[in-house]
Image (cartoon, rainbow, N blue to C red; front, side, top):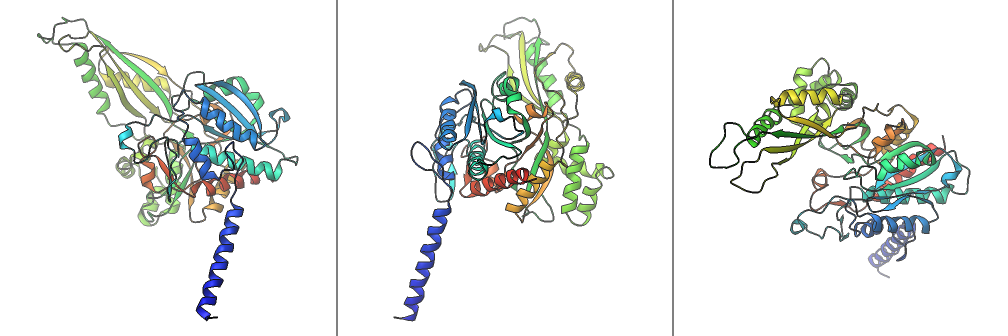
Length: 474
């Protein structure tokens, strides 16, 4: 036989054997429609249009996967807007301290459907990506949690271990429905959960942060977050209602002037132990003068502030923020001057900022004593979780094991999520998403064309498995 032909046949045999090994080693789970790998499971999950308040159908499907694969399931609310359940390797009645993987079933609306390259609830799988609303936020996390808990069940389910491991799927995280979702679970089932640690959604690994090494991927492990403070401003000014004669003062004019005073003012950079620690950690990864400044942020505050302002995602961790989300004069008649106007502000406060002091500062900046401020939603100051704990160390080690070229940071995040309910109870809680994403994927979260690359879920799942195993084997 020709030598080249022998080499070619040998190559084919090796390739076929390798492919067969890869296929046989690919982890799949049971489902009503047959076995699913991790990408297929996410695709199916995305196809449920589980916009906040309409999660039940998707929740029932996810729960059925848990039951089919041998997990112990407990229902903790079974209506739209409050469909929540746990799926554990041991029954909750075992009362073991619990490692909880928290995710939410609901997603934000799809927006303008004409701007999507693939239908938002198609779950399309291309050669390179998985498409659809929730691919990252938060169904991708939910599927990684599911596969990791099932894998732990297969390895440890028949052994007596020091911890239970539980997937907790909740509703209405995106809208933060009053009394529903995680808030309902905490209020009614906290003792049954017996949480030792909670892992929730957080930042993925991405690059472009370090000046000296812009290609370096960094994973932030969130130990705290900014708190929401939602305010309603209202102003009443009685005037002649006819639009043909413009009054000296009227409600809309007064509100717009006041909002201009508020919104146009730059928020101050506020330094605390958490965000200063972020800079110090970045300093350890930088080189030259940049490293010197970051390692000693208190000495170089004047130099740091303008640099931070040019990086909005970083400056958000050093400032309270005010976003005007609505102005409503409750009037649709063009030639009638309304005598009342309201405005809504979405404010996000740094962990140590008191609500009372912030509302007082808003009132002062408005420069209009007639404007009344009503607090629609607020949350208490909660201490950050310990970034020296066994759980944090195990997260850090699991990420570095699966992403040896990456680095990690203990961080705060600007967004608010369900983990905060557990932090308020004093439970160690950490937020991260163990997948690497190029920056352009981040632009599509909560936006059109949300998607993630194929293959990232498998590594993310393994990161969760390695974290859990480290805790079980301590």
